[in-house]
Image (cartoon, rainbow, N blue to C red):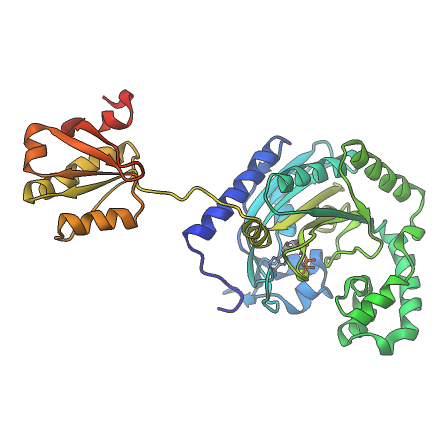
Length: 415
Ligand code: ATP
Ligand code: MG
């Protein structure tokens, strides 16, 4: 299907490696893993992400449950995470809660490089405090993970969207600014002017983008408290040596964000889809979804974009190779090999052999093709004398081994 990929070993290995790096970084910050279902009630996203957002209004894979309840494939995992934590009474005003997730998300977008319909996000959420140090901690964790990947140069962009009242004032000013320019805007932005005015700011259309450059800045609409929060985040990042750029046009496509928003972008390698991770503070979402008043901040990163970058930057993972290929020289060897292989496999040694009737030469060619590390030819002579020659296909060196105790050739502890 369009925008949905079949994945094979090499790609999966790169993903696993990148995800493993995330786990390592996140666990040192005390985040623990959650997993929620791919299907959720559609209303969850209408209430959280927002009815008029692109995601909910036109990108959902929606269907009906048997009882008629509208459900959908999740387009993101913050709402599902909040729902799950609330259902299991894990969100309270007293205690902080730090979680991360890894999993597939679904949006009916126009597929292109770095933009799929099924994609994988690694994300983290930090609940329970609106201290600016929490923003800094989350950003530094994300930064640490991204720095551990070979993805070229990345840049952190930050902005503040203020509190809802501040944003309401700002939106008025933004509409006043764009209204007289309506005819120059792309058709999407003409619609956004009424429904999702903030998103006018990150339209990729050249004219829209130019007009947005001259538009009023949200930062001029922040009251003292939001200003102080933003200042503290900037100072905290500076103290940790994390560089950033303030971008007044930075907004997010979801309705629930308040105050700090951010993106990590790749400086090259991804074209227009250059955002590798994005997120922000969402201090009102938990309450809006029926929970206590628990402030939070989170992010999500797209694994496919990271894989593209890592591959372009020469990520080379050790290719997995068979430890040993057993080659039979005659019927006695062919009969004994399955049992010999069985013993080694039980010690998690990768052993392979040909099941069909083939010549030694053909079996050797096969071992070469498989890039086996070693081969061992077994026939009546080797079985009867209990001695064979293990040959390294890399160096050509040979060593004698006891056929009945091959394990000892791999680790003396296995004797
Ligand atoms: P964009 O502006 O790139 O569409 P967005 O604002 O929709 O991003 P979020 O919903 O915040 O992004 O998602 C966070 C991250 O998830 C993105 O930065 C990106 O790395 C990844 N992502 C989002 N949508 C897709 C997609 N359709 N295909 C692949 N990755 C995606
Ligand atoms: Mg998007």
